[in-house]
Amino acid sequence: MKMSGNGCPPNYRSCDLRGMPLAKLKNIQAKLREEIEEVEIVLYQETANKCMKCEEKNRSVTLVPCNHYVVCDTCATTQRECPYCQTPVTPKA
Image 1 (cartoon, helix red, strand yellow):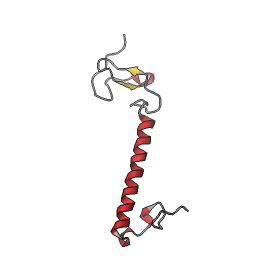
Image 2 (tube, one colour; image 1 turned 90 degrees about the vertical axis):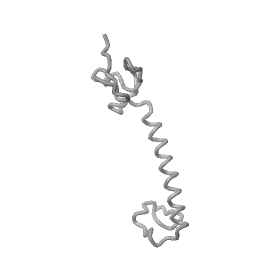
Image 3 (cartoon, helix red, strand yellow; image 1 turned 180 degrees about the vertical axis):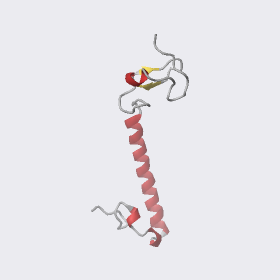
Image 4 (cartoon, helix red, strand yellow; image 1 turned 180 degrees about the horizontal axis):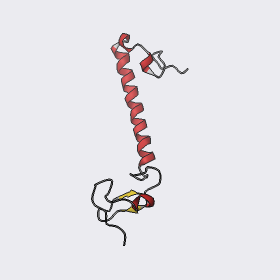
């Protein structure tokens, strides 16, 4: 099992944090914040081009009249309003 610099496993809940020196706690907190930021960046990159409704297919349709490019072709056929701004969508003619 991989241990962190403070001798605790990566799952800090299983470690007695209350007995640790304040400096170590702050170090753990800083490292966790960095890791959370990395996860948020990856999540953004993975979802930036995905449909806001199904989150599976890539975005491929610009909604009218708001011009948001936020849904795939499958979801666009059932959208009554833009999932981004909630503007009513004009159906294709």
